[in-house]
Length: 170
Image (cartoon, rainbow, N blue to C red; front, side):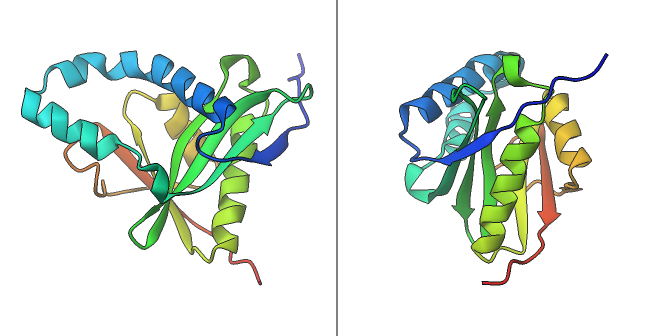
């Protein structure tokens, strides 16, 4: 059986774009339950601190990209955030009906390209131990495990990765 391939189109959008907001909500609905038991075990003070650690300040977002399917429907989302002197990959999500056809690789390649254009020498990211499919993707495309970095150090289920980028001549 051959895998169905799509031609993906990338669109840069604002963090507040309604399609981007919808895809992030779908991600939360899918991923949140995986960690609900873990977060429920924390005391109120720790839970509040973790909520702050995982919050994304829209003013720190420097790029948001969507991947569109053949019909022009947004089926994937990813963003870059300025985190200190680094650029961090945030909120990578592909709708389940578009998975397994290269959409996530297309999103990641575009983030890497945009980061290189911005002069970044590497990208960093955080995922969790209950997202084995995300970990597998990142490892397949050349990301290597690194120590947990702030602001995620309080969450021991964090899994952090980095990838050295090829610089782009301006």
